[in-house]
Image 1: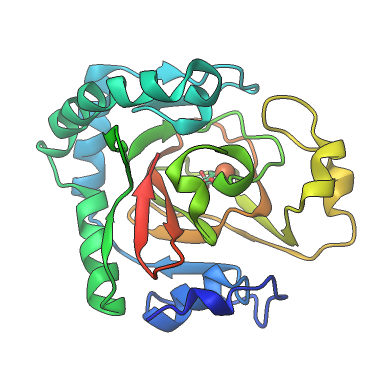
Image 2: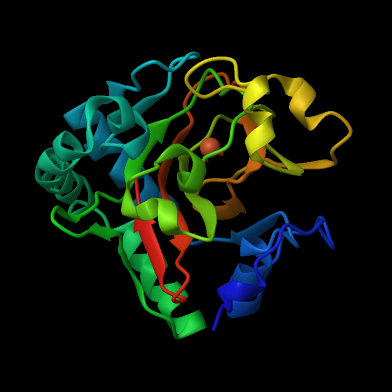
Length: 264
Ligand SMILES: O=C(O)CCC(=O)C(=O)O
Ligand SMILES: [Fe+2]
């Protein structure tokens, strides 16, 4: 059990990455630890096969996002301005496209959901919306020029969507391809978004770095096949890389009834 009623913003008790368990997930939702790491979640071969298939289908570029980020799959972030109805109309096509990729290798989302189900014993499912049905979950994403400093937090960003009911939000990334050099690290700050931070907002998603001034941070250098999970109410930023940096990713949230939901 994850006990969502305990969720409060706390400071990190450690900067170490913990392995996946019911306890470490709860600590991550409560912002007591910065990351959960699952080493060797997938083999190099499994990851390479996903990248090959994704490249065959071709990536789209995120709308209204600089620097450029590419993805396969749809996001609530982009459909916020287009409309919820259109998002749900696009789910079927996105799921079929995802199947064409994962059927050539394996489905990282299903593997992760099964592991979390085993560890926590709680209901673990794809998010759904009354009247519209299932959300899409699972992007293949290329972040090569880095990101701005940002958060991903449905209670503040997806108002009016069911996913905004989560009491804590995480992101998980399976690193499918990374460049050999020492770049493309992900930095996470021990500083969670609060409503008064909106004055630091720069554009569609970036925040001025003054918002994290004085906050401690950790960074990690992903290896192919690893999964890293972190709390996306915390400010975070990905540094640019030279070459390819491809992940399989989605959002993951805890509902007040203890269910864990996934969406993109
Ligand atoms: O690619 C990464 O390491 C993290 C990307 C990110 O901003 C997220 O997953 O929320
Ligand atoms: Fe993010």
